Each structure stands twice: as structure tokens, then as C-alpha cells.
Length: 208
Picture 1 (tube, rainbow, N blue to C red):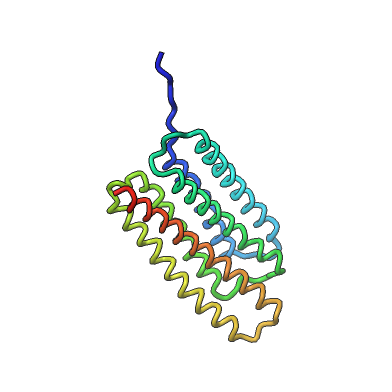
Picture 2 (cartoon, rainbow, N blue to C red):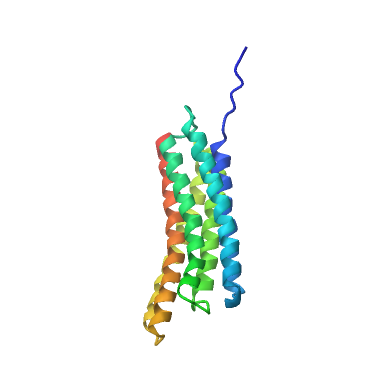
């Protein structure tokens, strides 16, 4: 009797994992655009719920990989991507935690605009993850990776201006530390998206 072997669709699993990052970045942009300091713990709870769901997918992929002999791309590359994507969702969660830890009661000057760039960057990565299955015919995939990198560059420019303005202002030390932490956390989200895009590009190079 032939064995019924179930193949795991790692491309779909990775796409699902990035979808949690998209959900988190959508929430982050909404929070920043409609910020109410009285709801900070509710915001944290909402973000934590998304982060926990992402963790479940992360662990599911790792469990499947631990018993898998053949994968469509190298296991090492899947592991790297899974970890970076998990880091993206964690970084988005961390942004809201900064508000709580630093007792921030207003959104930093350019943070709402930067959160929109973060959301676009994460969404572009999600598009790329959806195209990853076609890595052997990578024209469309490479275009999406370029899009991620371009948005990340846009985020870098805004982050630089935001930090310049912050340290040129006369805000008190407490606010300076808190707002700087928020900006750094937002910039980290874009950097991680670019890192994920770089890993995907390496997958394309290795397999074409």
C-alpha cells in the first residue's frame, strides 16, 4: 500500500506569517492616527494578541521543518525568513510598548507619517512573500523586493529628519528619550523588512 505523504506548503505558511505582520502594522498606523493615551493598555492587548497568533504560526513552521526531509528551498533559508518575519511582528509590538514604558501621552511629531511608511513596507513584503513560490521565474518577485527596498529608503530619510528635529527641539529629557525610542523602533521595522527582502533575493540567486 502506498504511503499517503502530506506535503507542507511552506510558501503559504510564510505568507500567513507575514499576514500577521500586516495586521500588526495596520493596527499600528490606526493607533498612531487616532491616538488616545487613555487606551494604551487596550492597544497593547490588541497588539499582543496579534503577536501571539504570529508566534503560533512561527512554532508550527518550526515543528513541520523538524521532521521534513525535502523542502522547496533550503531549510536554512526558510528558518532565516521565519525568524526575521517573527522579529518584524515583535518590533511592531515593541513600538506600542515604548509608549507604555516611557509614559508617552502624545504621538511624536513625525511618528504617524513614519507608521504609514512602515505599513507600506510590511505590505510590500507580504506581496513579495505571496510571489516567493515563483522564485524560479523571479521577474515579478524582484520588482516587489525593489519596492520593499525603496520604501525602506523612504523610511530612513524620514527617520533621519525626525531625529534631527527631535534633538534640535527644546523638549524635556523624558520626552526626548521616549520619542527617540519610538522612532528607533519604527525604523527597526523597516530595516527588518529590508533584511527579509535581502534573504528572499539570496534565495532567488541560489536557485536560478
